[in-house]
Image (tube, rainbow, N blue to C red; front, side, top):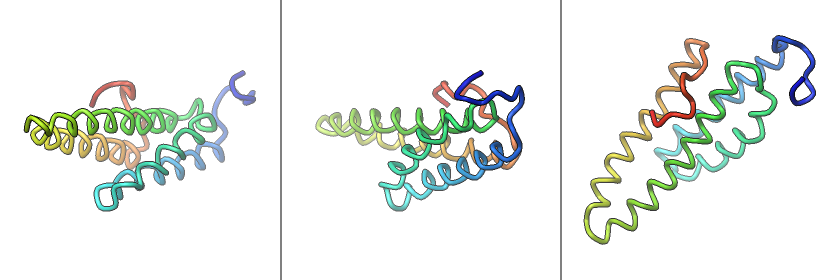
Length: 123
């Protein structure tokens, strides 16, 4: 029994709520391309809803979003510092492509109603 849920299979209402919240998180991450800061509420929601999604395919979506945020933030800090020696500008370009992949991949999985394979991975 994890997190107070006793049923062996996720209850359909809980899975449906998790699906809606996963969409919300991923839309906030997409919006960060235009507004920058929307990934912060996205990661906060992912932290809050990951426990409720435990045992559903959407748990991997929240884990993936959380990891995307922190890896992206670390990458941006490193690239920002390295801009002093001009290498950072190239890293920002690569980081943009990486972020794009990390934002598109979970949307495809949501449309297919599948879990993220290897949510702890780099891509």
